[in-house]
Image 1 (cartoon, rainbow, N blue to C red):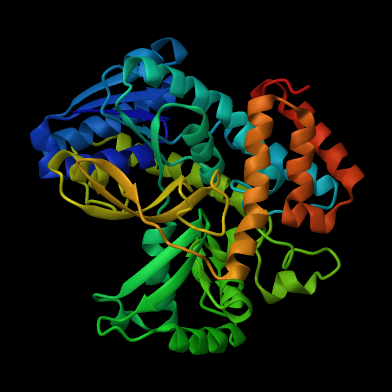
Image 2: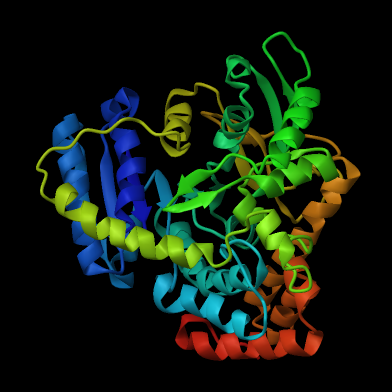
Length: 450
């Protein structure tokens, strides 16, 4: 079985995903053939050393080959059964820095900027041309392969692939897996985790915990709401995330104001709406403990952390691995063995899986995986306020995809104008000026827009 990893220079993530595959006896028995692809020779070499150490330590007997640059892309993909995508186009320096620094000149502050907002829009426009290159190569040399997309902005990249290419694509994000576990541990409800039943649906990073019951079928939301309100009043529970202390106060406020908990973190969701990051209300930043400029700090910490960890990792000839919570290896197992496995997946809303969201939106819903592929579950209608929240994000997603497909600059303006956080802070004229300046600064990282 051949697995091609696009963006294999992301050493820690490729280690986790491919290590998971080597931890699966089922996949090992199939015979593993790893094709590691990247455009950075040094990072690709580092990942190759780590994956080979895992292979030796786990006795997985995998065949491992590396492929460098676009000239070797088709060879990397040829005959693949599964393709894992984890690319980040433009990296922290220069592109993430640009995505944060230019908006700040206009008074627009962000926390993560990789999913929505002006940062998410620009990241999408940098990445879709690369994804299209991958798609055309896959259509030619591995037309039956499944693409497992882990790259952000998840809904926009996955939605583009599903609408405009012939590649079988599923978008994967671990926020669904960890949602209930994180909530229950903070609220002191860990005893309710065993055999609980949940329903989560919406869009990536803004999917909703619609139903949550314990093993006896008791609705847990009344107790969740009570405890979340009390905990919010006490300032929440702080967690160390990359050296920064994070609380979950935005999501607790969602529970209070909207009635439901959301899958992705408060630092993400703080910038997906017009409610919390407001120059006229600076006290909200302190009240909800919103970590402005968090993603650049996280990038710097990750770079420093890799510099420290790399010497240890790269010095090992053999390495062990415990299977992670990532979906990829479980999806492969389910398809190979025809054994059903449930995931939260990002799919097109074909047939209105979620009735009150548009058909061309990329939605996150429960999906069943087996030998026939991936079958999404029909959820029905979201509560009207949740569908409305999702639509404020979907509007930006659909118009950004339109901009990428048509190469019309005016659609980039439209996407930024309709972004909830951007529109809450800036005038239309300033939005247009900011977009123009960002396009100019990104230069060749983006195609030309007319």
